[in-house]
Each structure stands twice: as C-alpha cells, then as structure tokens.
Length: 532
Image (cartoon, rainbow, N blue to C red; front, side, top):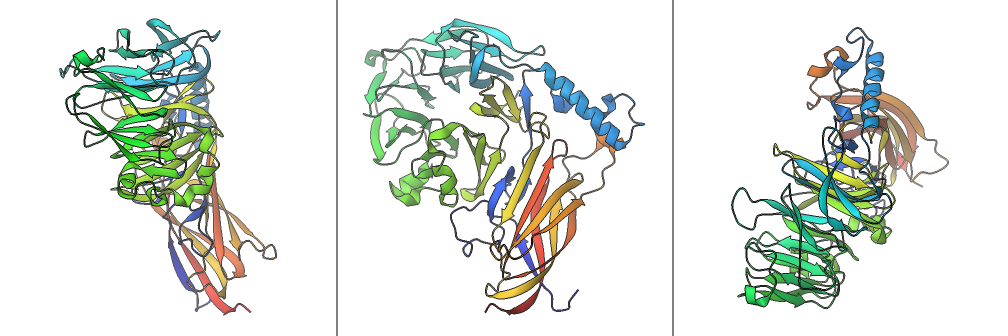
C-alpha cells in the first residue's frame, strides 16, 4: 500500500440525521439507520428480535440439545433443526381470542393480560396468559373498541393491596386486583374516561371528553364529590394525556396546551398554564425522568417546555424532523425501556422511531422496520424484577420485545449509511484504498457493504463486497456459549475509488444470530489533487 496513505477514524455515534446537509453531518452520523439502536455509550447495536406470546413456552427458549441427533450433527444441521423446533413452538402460540387489534396490554404480579373485541365485535373481553395459552377473565360487559391505559395503584398503602386501575374511553374506569374486576362509577356522563394517573397522595385523576378531569378523595378512587374531597376541573380542550412528574406535580396535556396541576389534595390544588401553544399527541406520552411526548412541532421534553416555553427550541427532534412530520397523524403507540434509557414511537406504516438519552443528554435516534403493525404497548417488570416489554398487534397477537433473534420467525435487515465523509479535506480528491470495520459480536456475522463516492456521482462505480467476521463460537458448546459476551474483531475491506468524499452503506440480515455492535470505521486513503 502507498506510503502516503492517511487513516481517518470514524466513531459510529450520533445516530440518524435527516435534517443536516452533507457538509454539516458529523463523521459517524447516518442518513439511514434501520433496525439498529443506540446504546447508552453511543454505539450502534442491531436490535434484538420479538416473538409472539401467550404464556406458552417461548420459541427462542428451544435449545440445540433438544434437536434430534445432537451433538453429532454438523453446525448447519443443528441450526436448521433448532429453527424447526422454534417454528413448531411458534405455531402453537395463538392470537388473543376474538377479532380486530389487541386493545390493550398490561402486566400485574408477573402475569400478562390483554383486551380484545369478541369475534362478532359486540363487546370486549379480558384474557390472561397461561401455560396453555390465553384464558378469559370474568368482567362486567365491556363496550368494544376502546384503547386501554393502565396504572398500578395502592390506595391503602398496605403491601397486600396493590391493584391495576385502567380506562379505555368506552367504558367506566376499572380496578383489578388479579382476581376481581370491578368498575368505578364517576359523576360524569357519559362515564367513559379517556386517560388517568394517580398522585402520590393516593388520589385518582380521570379525564373525560369535553375538556375536564375529575380527582377523587384521598385514598378512595370511588368518591369524586366535593363533600368527600373530590372535584372537577375544566381545561377547555380535549385532554390527550395525564402524567405525574417526579416532583409530584401533574402535567395535564391537550393537543395545543399544557397545564400543571399543583398540590396533594383539594385543600391546595391549583391548575396553572405551562404552555399555551404546545401540547401532546395522544398515545405518545411517556416518562423518562421527565415526560417526553410528540407535539405538532416534534418530540418534546417537559423540562424543556418549562425552560423555553412555546418556542421551537423546546423540541429535541430536529435531526429527525422530516421522518416525524410525515407520520404525525399515524401514531399507534409508544413505550420506554428504562434499562436502555430508550423511548420508542410506533407508527401505522410498520416503522418506529427510537430515541436514546443518557443523563438528560440526547444520544441519538434510529428507525425500525417491523413486520407487524402495533396497536398498543406496555412495559414494566416481571415477577423477578426484570424489565419486560410487549406490543399488542393489529393482527390480534401479543408480541414480547427483546425476545429471540428474529421478527417472530422472520429474518430482518439492519442497515446503516453514513454521511459523505471527506477525511478533513473536502476540496481534495483521494484514492480510497481500504475500509476497516470494528464490530463486537458473540458470533459470526455476515454483511454487505457499498461505497458511494462524491455524493453518489453516477460516473464513479460502486464497490460491493461480502464480508464475514466474528469471535470464536463452537456450536457443539451452544448451551454454554457466552451470548452476552463481546469479542471485538476488525474486518479489512479493500476498496478502490477516487473522489473528494465517500459514504459507507452496510447491510446485515439474519433470523438467527444475536445482535452485534458497530463501533467505528477506519478509512485508508491516499491524497490526490485539488478539485478543479
């Protein structure tokens, strides 16, 4: 290789940037970043898979030792046999009984529950997971077609009185202790609350169509009369969400305004306007220390609204604004992963937007391409305190997130394309000689790459290479393999092109191998003359 070769190190960080020009993009930022997520250290990690769920054995829990003929089989035969076992398990997991989308999902005391309309669409029913699949839970007759929102509550303060309180916009609010499902009668007609939250002082807040909300008596979610300490507050616009904040204040969101509800009881309650031209879109409000939600201007964080008010600087999504503006009317659900400091917005076109933040700092955005259309989402903890997440699909299935290495048995592609990088000399031509990719992976990975030169000038040929890299992995030791470990490998890809700048596109597709992390790239180039 030429002795005058220069090496540029590109740290893969910053995430998706769809708003900046090619010259403004930082090295490592991407103009395409699908089915990767950003870790809390800023690296790009292929997302884990998801699979259907009903309480029956998970397909991904199948082991190579269960494959007939193991361990005498070849690695290829073992993988094929394992996929067959997973498919057999998957076929046994049925959708929630009924018709239409899953209307709501929630977990309680280590058991997952789901709502769905009946086959004829005349009512909604509640089901719970079991080792034999979904089992119906006895409830009063429920009107169909709601969108369920739930909170875990304890109105007595006793360790044994935890319960779920929920609303769906079609029926009275409900409370459920794992055995008994009862409805909460309010003083509003029609009695069909749309959103809820619970104050630390054990007061239930319910919003209703028409622009008002009720608050209950302290410790009793069934009493709303002023005689008992309850009351009604009008805000003049349809309420799109309620979220108790870390400082015990409560944000009341409408589509175009945001209010703060101060106090702990009727004795000191006050409602004050926080933003008169900034609100939240339904189904997008989640808590990550501060409330984060989608407004017409983009993704917004409540602490920034408190700091900047209604101004554009209160938004945090400038880099991905083009993707958001196209999907404002198509939001289906949102969720958070506190373990990963991640917020996710799901859309009706089977895409999702992920945001990772750490200590209040925005680490970056990525996009997901899913093979399902979510209708609702829930995240929480299982009986062992481990964080879990679920999606309720338009197809009636419930899907467990972070489960398996496929999209419910289907292969999925992870792609990234960097911005055009000039190696510090944007007006000078270079001969690009080698691309080195640093990857952390517990297994081998197979990927493709292409190089685009001079803003994809059609007169400069593209380079395409198939590559394989990874750490040592012995299939005969499958059950003892350290899937959670990371082994760093460098792949040398020899390229050939002359241009001022270069963009790298990489693609990986699999339905089997676990996620890998893309850390950085090194570009080897020899200087040529200045552009004329």
